[in-house]
Length: 114
Image (cartoon, rainbow, N blue to C red; front, side):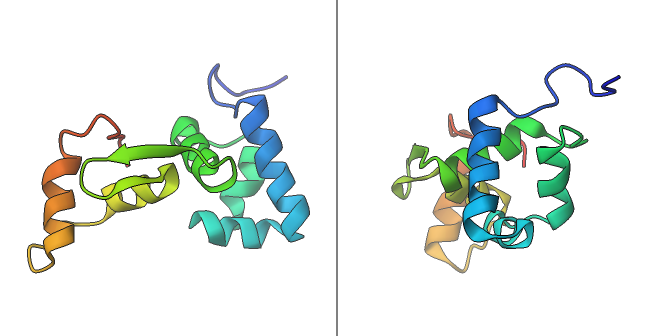
């Protein structure tokens, strides 16, 4: 019996891309490092047991391994995983780029809970 709630598993294409990345790199640890998550996250995603935000992880995987991009109002075209990384960073008013991203990310159509 699968105890996961509906919607808590990766889409088949995303899961295949994640598994392919693990196979190509030879380890879950290398994939975890490239996605900036723990090895446990990779394992639980592949085993359909990830308790966190599966859609957010799917977006990171699409950006890193499926070359999904977004149009950033500040930086132009960039990978979805880079967009999510920028959203998670604190605003730094001493850095003009970070300040611009801090303002733009608040209302951007690409904004996700990070």
